[in-house]
Image 1 (cartoon, rainbow, N blue to C red):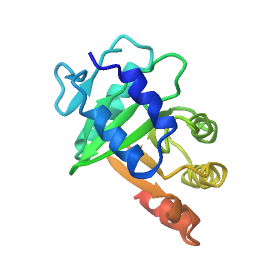
Image 2 (spheres, helix red, strand yellow):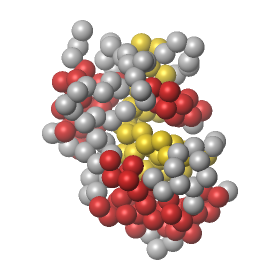
Image 3 (tube, one colour):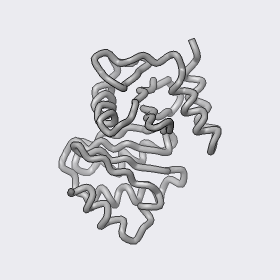
Image 4 (cartoon, one colour):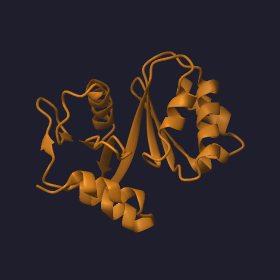
Length: 180
């Protein structure tokens, strides 16, 4: 069996195209098996973990948005993403942050630094769009490696890139998409 923990650890030292190839290499490993009673979701184990229900709920939403989802293990001692999403041959790692409290997005985004350069915020509560927009903007200002924050709210998917967060119209654009 291939050592997925060692392959995940390589993500901390690779950049650019090498990083992207490594993400794809991990998703293509033989370790993954289809999750029982799910379509388009694959795992390498960990179904009994504390966070598995949150991971599975977010994975289901990602599948509805056209992704194939690989739930990653959480090897001890290595900060790794929670998922790899694949769509149209593009593989992207995401760290999941489930937002269930009224003021937790900022803290949860900061926790994801050094785990992945992409974060998935699964919003499962009423959350102020202006507060969320400020938290996302601050996250990009604070984390130079951040590429994307993907927000799931109900059936909506909002992708926020670094460039979008720096736009003059970011707040109004984000709030319009979030409240739509």
